[in-house]
Image (cartoon, rainbow, N blue to C red; front, side, top):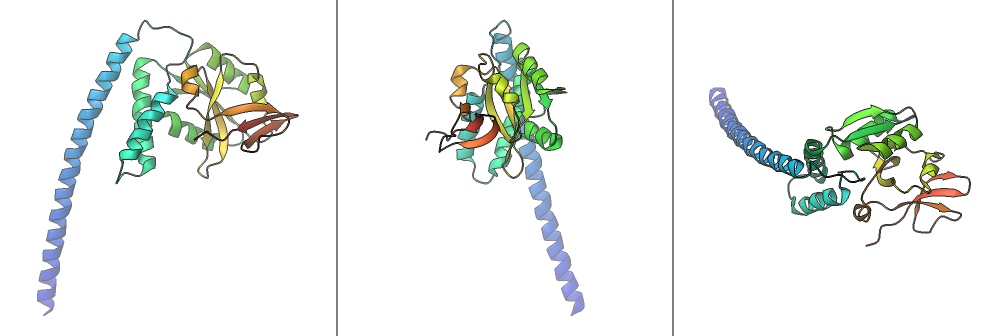
Length: 232
């Protein structure tokens, strides 16, 4: 009797191994297909880079509105894939393809939560862009004014660096960077095209009373930095 049980167990194990090997072969084939599609996407990005090589302008090539449209469309189509996976994979692909068009730098200033902010920055902007560490918020903002740079600056409730943007005409705060619990720990600032800002989080500097539908991000005297409720 024990021999029969052992024989059945061995047969079950062999069946399981065969099924595993078949699934692994499927995954290998899917990996090849995914790579082939990525190769085509990269080739298309290189074509765009060639067409835009002589294009000037005073705005970043980064297009948050375009990225949001791509990610949102894919999220509505995903059934098995977790939403965070879809976001991360396509943001990384888009960051790499953008870097083929123009090298975009991430100028980071962080104090208390450098590791958490770096992590949030990479989740949002991918790993393709070169990161530099700015010695102050002012230096990060200056780099964003002068070059193809996104300034990523730590934000605490008593931060006041954002006051420098009150009358700014070239830079805009266009993204909230959050930690794993969803708290805002930094802002992304850059020369974003006006048409793209319409799809970005509405981050504003207000004086006096905070609007009822706004989230208070930081305060400096009578001025408040708020995240307004997005319109449906």
